[in-house]
Length: 335
Image (cartoon, one colour):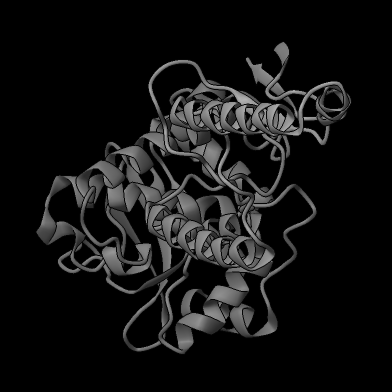
């Protein structure tokens, strides 16, 4: 940081002292010359960009702060329309031994993130509806919406419906009664659910679901790839999903290899029945799980801070910061 200091005008006291030894007219002439020199110096310094614009008033700062904050909020709101990869609500190793840390890390950070990136690309420049609304027409709109849009929704739901062992609770009394009525018992339900997700029933990649159907009854269904029961024209039973198990190989292969049934059986230990029970209540009212990253995106607005800065017009050449002091000196600084 270079600081230069130079005197722009004659010291007034020196001029007055000199004036005692000179004729009054000559002293006045010296003062006039000094004033003109100072005026010319300020003019040329200002033209070169060395003299800063006056500091804004408090009212101007307040106005610019409000305007900037509103602009910042609008910009964040626009960017927040893009779907986001939500953070896990637990550590990567929190679901062990049912699901190992490495599988969780790759599944969330790589596979799920790929779906997020691809659906955002497909919707770039267009309005992005809430993720749950996107599901309805995903099949009709094509592979990007069906595979990537479905993949984002399914995985958002998947992470929320799991919890560390001993933390997920049990089905609520209302859900337990509905399970008994539809499947005989909780154990019978689990057996039928596992059968629906077995390779013989769901060949290749897909999901197995517990849904609330149009008659408000529970049903088990499965879908291929990243389809889900919210999609119009979906294979199987349409409805509102309240529980889903990912049976793609990337969800279990590192630990279980070809043994998908063993993975599903171990998965019951990390089901978050508290969340599933809440979704069941919503589904009876016709509401599907809203699992996208909207709350996280909205929080970014609160984290954004606006710091008003007055920027002088950019000019060619070197940039300097200027400070005048009461002794008639100028400090020039550049970095």
